[in-house]
Structure formats: C-alpha cells, structure tokens
Length: 155
Ligand SMILES: [Zn+2]
Ligand SMILES: [Zn+2]
Image (tube, rainbow, N blue to C red; front, side):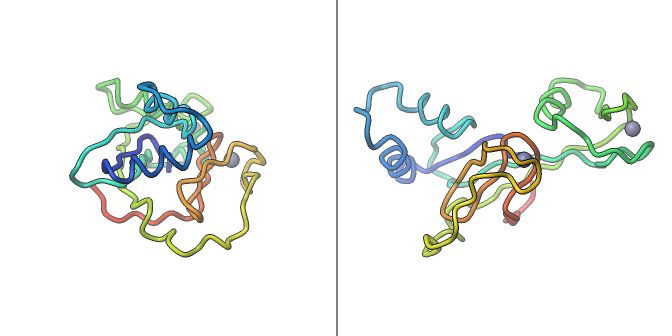
C-alpha cells in the first residue's frame, strides 16, 4: 500500500501546521511547505477529513513471474493516467489489474501513544525516509512498508 494524499479538517490542518512549522513564520505558502514536509499532497475540507488516502495495485506480486512490483508510486500514477488498466511488473510483464483505494484515519489510533519508540529507519528497505503521521503511524517513502496502518473503510 502506498499513501498518496492527506485530507485534513481546517482544525487539524491548523494544528499540524503549527506543530510541523513551529519555528518558521507562517506565510501564505504554508500549505506548500507542509506538503514538502509530508511529501504528500495535502488538502483541507470539512467533511470526511483527517484521513490519508492509500492506494494499492492488485494483484501484486506479478501473477506470471511472482516478482513483487517495484516503484509503486510511479506505477500507480501511470495506472491512473492510462485507460488500459494494465500493470507492468519489474520484468516487463503486462497484466490487467485493479487499483484499491483506502482511507486511513490519521489521528484515531495515535492518541496517547507518544511514548512509542521512534523508528528512523525503514525495517523493510533500510531507507531513512520514514514519514510519521502521528505518534505511531508511519510509512516509508522509498518502498511500500508501513506500520500496519489499518484501513478504516474502502471505497
Ligand atoms: Zn512478471
Ligand atoms: Zn522502505
């Protein structure tokens, strides 16, 4: 699963901006800078908020050679922009698949779990680019590892 976007309520947005950008004077580019910090598009709306949008391609791994898909972010972008509904595996097989979209609640589980050990390195690929969404919710920006974030519901 790959997180692709974050949706926040106006209140949460203000809170997150204050937390994340506490040292800097807030200007009208705050939204952009928050997106840079989170490495994901951030949008603010008043209904169905405080979610992170997570997408995955199914089937994965490839049904022909059984290799897991690589560069999932790029594959998902391509899958969304093309009409063919074809997935291309690392060895070049093309097969038809579907994209599943999940909405994860960002703040629900992380309340009161501040004492958790911080993970600074991805346990799957060793990347230092671990992105936090709360005290205990995190995912890797370089592979599809996450901290076991549970899908709240599926579209
Ligand atoms: Zn294959
Ligand atoms: Zn990783």
